Length: 233
Image 1 (cartoon, rainbow, N blue to C red):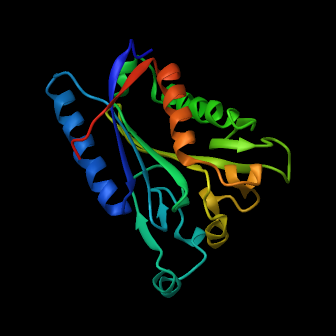
Image 2 (image 1 turned 180 degrees about the vertical axis):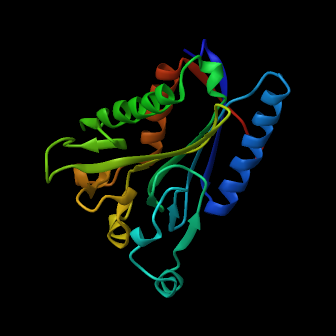
């Protein structure tokens, strides 16, 4: 896979969505420019949490946002139309958001395999907490009770942008997320499926630092890389 490639790792903590997006874009453009020049490219994994925000993918439908601009303003929730794939989702405190900004060619895998491996990391991460996550056909992300009609619920969402095999945006894993906010959207465009979190499933608050640690361990195993702390932000 990654042949023990070094991946720059940053944990930005609670960061405004627009600020994190600007940083992602800077890194993405740097990698893309190096690749176009035939130079060696770097890879980054960024962790953060965001203040309350709804984001809509480039193929998403604004009608899946069930509240108006006045409600957003009164409740202090931001809204962004983005260039990632997928439909609408929610980010907020207590949710682990990760942005792998990779030159996928460094890993000798296809974009489809890249997404598949990211799902595998998430599935293996929640397994440490006794939860059985799975993929659902035609629905990117990680689900509990996948394929059980009426019980399917998403615990992790994935929405990426990939250009010239360079990726940005990423995943959101609900740890201690306030799930009430999902009632104001059709998450990922689905009207008939639920959303859940580690906290809800385990009926207790979960240490997000523990989740990060497990994710990093599984990420290194699945992608065959070494995460190296980077404080350049």
